[in-house]
Length: 539
Image (cartoon, rainbow, N blue to C red):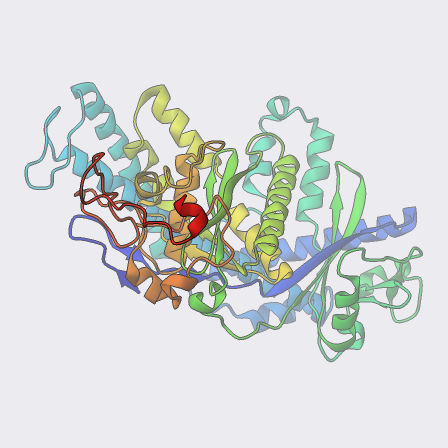
């Protein structure tokens, strides 16, 4: 649903509740012996070769019938029916993801070309009278953009040809790691270290769960009581089996430290998928368990925000936050949560988890049940960034800042952690939040001891938009929209709470801000004290 905000402004999409995660995934460490490790390497390499061959066949089929039954039957002879089912399912998922990426690539190239064409339609240093678009500043800029348009047009033609043929490109192990092979010195890797990573990425030991089987999986079976791990081996690896029925039984039991009770309950009543992976940097083996969870009844935005909302504005290096009550008024003092957006991936992920934990703590302290955030993904900005985000060093720096914002990772992590904490995430349209917040809320939420930034003001705008309220303060329709009366709109106010409307710019008095009447000394209209009514006071 779209809400119109004016003729000269773009339309603002209505807020919505972000869907909670549909599954869980936990990890623990495996400690195989030397013989068991050799067996795992052999199994992963064998199944990996089958997965590569099946992916090649799936890509050859293109957009037509996937023919999964035939492919599975061909792989069963060299593995088993369950291993073949996991391989064909993974190949189909990889092809589907590559196909969607190809469509996104075409969409991005078309956006970039349309942006350049609009600028080229205007004269150099001038403006197109029909569209109002400004042209490029100099002839040199226009020449370089014309060259770039030719390059983008050639790329678009190649993508269109691949889409017409149904031909996708998938690299098992990762395109980036494959390209690193030609730049080992820059990556500070030896050829042996690179091959260890390459083999670890292309290894395939994945077993899909089965609800009707013992402990939720027949291929990789783990007893929740004892933690014993048994791996079903294909017939060609019968010499590695340490127990009957061609199974490899690991000597060291495993134990999950996180959500162990939920995993045990799922293993007894449902299906559990297991993945065995190897980390070549740490020289460790890991076991991942994942399963689906039941999704509850859908919740509306009004239900999620009936007790207020904690709004946040995602910026480079920090989160600007503010809590709002049900009528859309800020409660308490806005605060800032720092995040690390540079450095190693592990450091950045840890910073995001810590920041979200802080947000959840503040939300529970404020008594709200929802967190509002902008629906940012910067897809359009990244597609047309070089055409619309300035030029020179300043433009590059700004594009780097936009590209470095962890929007997708932060959004996914926020949805998962809030779902575990019993909170809802509300996504709102990011249009004009910073501009209108600075205009209407930056001064009201500032105090003598705290100076609010435009980012804090933007968070207030985000929270009010999540409640379905307007940006400006003190309107009676906001109270009616929130379901609160004017007297009940600010329960439990603190000294820093801002519940009063802004004064009118025309100088007229308002109902809650009457104009103070000034009188002169001796004015007959001045109210005088009444005469004393007691004997003592009359003396």
